[in-house]
Amino acid sequence: MIEFSSVTKRFPDGTVAVDDFSLVIPSRKITVLVGSSGSGKTTILRMVNRMVDPTSGTVSIDGEDVQTLKPVHLRRRIGYVMQNSGLLPHRKVVDNIATVPLLTGVKRTAAHERALELMDTVGLERSLADKYPSQLSGGQQQRVGVARGLAVDPNILLMDEPFGAVDPIVRDDLQNELLRLQRELGKTVLFVTHDIDEAFRLGDQVVIFRKGGIVAQKGTPAEILARPADDFVASFVGADRGKRALHIERTPTGSVLVDSEGRTAGVLSADDSASVEAKAATVSVAGATAQGEDPT
Ligand SMILES: Nc1ncnc2c1ncn2[C@@H]1O[C@H](COP(=O)(O)OP(=O)(O)OP(=O)(O)O)[C@@H](O)[C@H]1O
Image 1 (cartoon, rainbow, N blue to C red):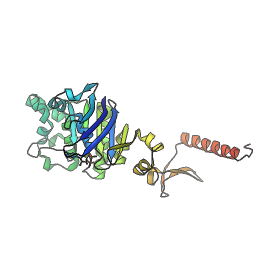
Image 2: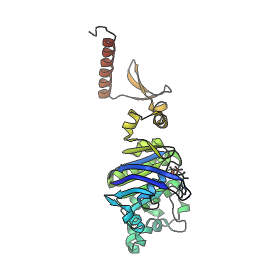
Image 3: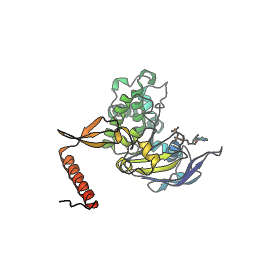
Image 4: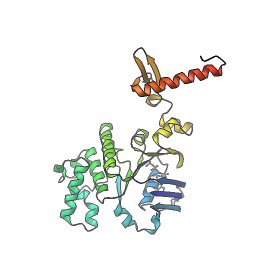
């Protein structure tokens, strides 16, 4: 578990990037920080591995204040995946993945063998091992970035907009891959994105920031969608429009879900359908009662 307690970060130029921020990040779950640019998400993420130190407050991992731990040790036990993969252009894929294990003294053959296994894990052909990053597609480069983040076998994986720079189809693939990996590996993942769809798809816990680094709402995607804390959140998550604002329409052949643009978005399964119909009946009975009519 990672815990932020009343954390503030003021940079030397006076910018307050994070102001009195508290959050518990549960182990083996994906927590997603989402919000507009400049809301302090990256700064928060970087405080976990001490790329940034807080001005006040504490960040702890399993009860241990990270301030008491050496940055180099933290970075060797925490995976870090960034936008544009951050690969070293003059190193082959296999060497990029093996960078940190080699630094920590793992023998070259063992580090390379492990790198090849990680290529399997993230769905990369082993034949790409001897290529240079520029010879790979954007999606492949991101997979190498994820493999490199996993190379130290970390319990914690920090991911800073890792899929921000790839096209929507590849992004979709990478998100699926991360969910699959998470089912297999069960890491504690802290993930930063601008994209609310990505946040809802990946996050067990989602934290929505408004400008100025203030937490507008945190919860599961279902909690946030079912009960947005205020108009800002409702508008940010699109609860009031498009594919998220669904209503039931009865057709001669059954009930369907329709979005706010009138497009059919799906159907209710038989069970759901029965319970929704029952609820609708209860509501109309209650309504009739409220108006003083006899419901029978
Ligand atoms: N080293 C620094 N010195 C001064 N100000 C900084 C520094 N790093 C970040 N900031 C400022 O702190 C604020 C938060 O930045 P941060 O990168 O954490 O936001 P973010 O939510 O991750 O933004 P984005 O989504 O654009 O990456 C911004 O106003 C930024 O300009």
